Image (tube, rainbow, N blue to C red):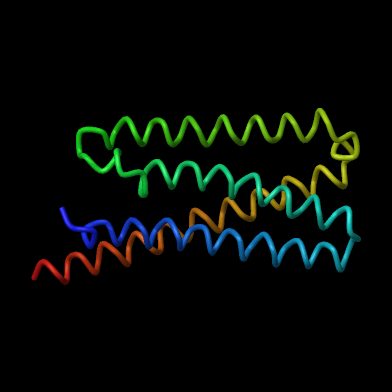
Length: 142
């Protein structure tokens, strides 16, 4: 196996990370300018929760060298999804239990909005890049 065989996987992983990072930075700056520093930090933290979870899942699926074998791919996908859920739940639990300000309606709304916006951008980016890499592989097979 050559390293070029896994180039689409690297493209998916790094494309996802760049899109989510850009989204959380832009949203946090926008919220900071409109609602203040605390709200901006909370918006950034909401996006970061999604980014951390997707970094774990993406690494397990696309970058981990031991998971490239076809017979390990299914278990890697299950580990990736379970890990993403556990990371998200843990980080939300820590945020709401250890940061009393996060329990206020406005702050909680900004946190969840930052999280959901980053999540949605991640879904769109993976779908877009997956379609591009599939089209590139089909054209190479011709």
